[in-house]
Image 1: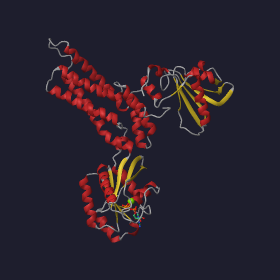
Image 2: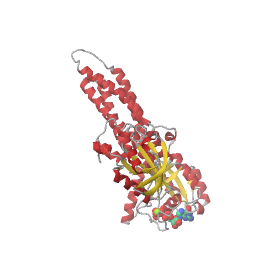
Image 3: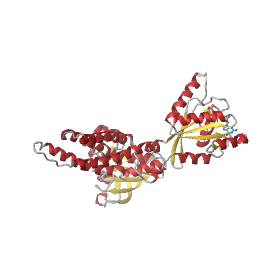
Length: 460
Ligand SMILES: Nc1nc2c(ncn2[C@@H]2O[C@H](COP(=O)(O)OP(=O)(O)OP(=O)(O)O)[C@@H](O)[C@H]2O)c(=O)[nH]1
Ligand SMILES: [Mg+2]
């Protein structure tokens, strides 16, 4: 999907609200002719004589036939989202009406918008930079407080503003150094190497911090991968179901019930956790169960958090200590969760409390003490960063460009240390500028744009 010059001038139309029945539906048009086209089918005031940011009541007519009574909002270029003429038509929320109105406009010369085309136009017309445009998509798709915050920070300027500023300073150095190349005979220095180093080091600090935020960002966007692991029959599937409030996984008293892993998302305190119920860990001769067990071990390695679940009536202290030891060696944060408190031996519970005071006692079957478990899970994930409004990188594309920027900045620093010739120094700086520009959209290719905007939904 790339746009020809001609397509960029079309007036585009799409439903901006979700498909289906609702109280109202909003149809959006953008382009030079958005207002004149609407005027052709609208009976009410003459829209071409109205001010920007005004709303008008009237009817949409196909010839003599009234399709609907509507409200038309006008946004005259450049004071609109796309910086083009924009019209928003609020109709009654029936898909029949919406289809009739859109068809009518297409007959009059508008064109159905492609996915993300409104946002792409906004970007191309300088409404915001690329990182902000991508944040619009994230914002629409965010389904938890945490991902919403991250997207909002990014959309409102976030890190791209700071990067743009530093990039502009670096451009200045690049051109000074390139200028020196023209004066090789004379021994002139337009760009202070010390100042350049200070700037590059400052950039490095910003970049490092952003790179560091990516792990957290990723977790916020995709959910914290949390594996429930333990022996067969510990109650792992029961716990998953209890947390989900839904009978998602099969529960039975047959050891080895779960073989493939089952996962689902749960929102705890505004953070999405991706819970993964796994095959119980034991030595087994059953081939399929054995595959399940090895998958469990793989999942545990990549998890952000493990809930180590054991049956109080079926696990002795030696086993528990051995399992905990293994988990500590694995290096993934974990919680010790003792299940089936409802039928536990109280002596054993006391012993466990003194040996492992941080154990959480629950009954998955009776949904007992799950609130405590949820709180402890939330505590383990350090989310203070996003709450303080810090910028967090959630986008793999940005991460990739940041890592490449870091490398080329390191090359610049190394070049300064080794007093390499100006032409090489200029090249390393240009490379850093290129990768920085990829983040803010100062450097774009059609492929890159197509890739980003095709992920949007139509109407956005
Ligand atoms: N009394 C009691 N029974 C429970 C509790 N939680 C689970 N059970 C029972 O323990 C048995 C095993 O539960 P599952 O959830 O299937 O256990 P699992 O860990 O998923 O087992 P596998 O999939 O075989 O690894 C079932 O009969 C559950 O009803 C609990 O809190 N109290
Ligand atoms: Mg199970």
